[in-house]
Length: 427
Ligand code: NAD
Image 1 (spheres, rainbow, N blue to C red):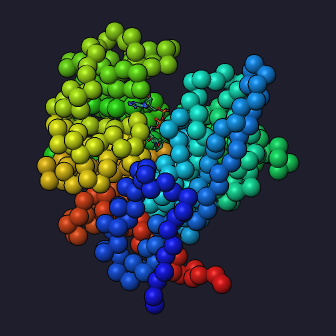
Image 2: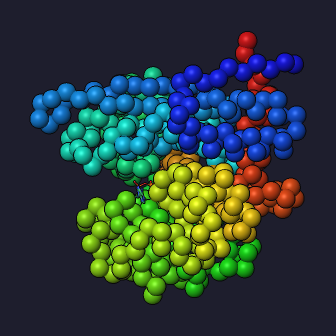
């Protein structure tokens, strides 16, 4: 069969990242897909892209417009699933890449979802709570034509939280005329949220690190850990690493970089960040330069902020044994190659940060059945799904002599493309 593929006209060739990184990761896995490779172009173009105008009345009475997105990258294995980001750097290109990584992550973990992602291009810190509520509600209303408990289920990401999900759930429910708890996950417990969801991504990062450590002979207890990003993922991961005997020697957030070779008091740092919105002004550690931060000698480095942070230059300078990707897409493909050459083990985002979407899946199941599980049950099921996925991906990496990332992509892309093939093309 001759294959003709058009180019995606809506992408800006001048600014190819991070979608270009995702495409390169897909290209790397294609030779491992056997006959399914004929379907690989499916993964190189999102199924559906929605760009919406989000107009609101600001507190001073003026009218402002913002740009919002919802991208459904692939729906072959089930409804779309993926977070909503409020950040000034949000772009269509970024949301497409994040949606693609969700497709791979959900399939790698065996969750019955496709991949999706959304966002609004705003700095949430520049708005009052009332304005944020209006932005969230209008955005939800605009994307209401593509989301729903059996269509596409958003969740929190950078700049959004439980409250954002409560407003989304309420807006969608009002528009459809009945309470639809399952339209979003990461909700407050009182609205059908799940125990353990708030901590799940950080807990999953820890589980992935622990399993990597066991197989590489680098125990968490006594290990030195550096964490970039001190929000939902980085903050909770740091806390659980600490609880298991690791020493967090440096932290970085959007405003501050700090270090303490004796180990940072994480509960105190969390309390400071909760009270002041960032680590700036925290007394339990010394300020550190950005270059020094990336060159700290440690056993585990956890990027848990934005994509594209581990550049080739930083990959060359880093002095860690294992990188555990809490963030989505923190390592560029060129940096991945350097880390591989330098024998630094990378546990990729699609595995390491999958704890969040796994417990989101539990939340969605609980909402459907209106029957809620205990936190012990949730954490035990999370452990079991993460361990099973970790083992399968690790085995594939050994057998095929590929990186953990490529192994995760092989397993995931095989599942997605087998579903694509079995469903067939309509008409
Ligand atoms: P968050 O908004 O709770 O925290 C983000 C943190 O990153 C903050 O501490 C912020 O100050 C810091 N940060 C922002 N820009 C930075 C910069 N330029 N340099 C250093 N630090 C910076 O967001 P989150 O939910 O923790 O998400 C972090 C990453 O994890 C994102 O890549 C997100 O997609 C990914 N992720 C989140 C979840 C989840 O359940 N929340 C699940 C999977 C993956």
